[in-house]
Image (cartoon, rainbow, N blue to C red; front, side, top):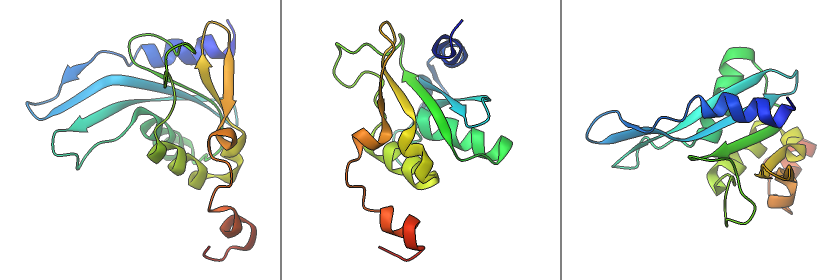
Length: 146
């Protein structure tokens, strides 16, 4: 079993869409990340109808990684709904803009993380490819506000 299958299986276990209340739904998008040390952490999307509490699966997985291990660097990420990312479906497996920004801010090393875009072919893209010319680089380099 390769690392992508391990990530997929861990994330898939979190997929069971449910209404938490008449206002909140969860587990309809799932994610698994491989931390720098090889540990795997999962997350799931949780959304409230007011938009105040929405958290994507990618951010939840990264937060679980940090809370449970103190790590901030992610090597690999897979996210999906009811089936793994399919490269022929636009946006399949791609983190939203808020998640991309959070992952980049969590650690500049995350620019090198592989994000699964097509599970069948193991095609990936790096976070840096999704965020060319990222605005925060200067702060990482100098410690100063950009």
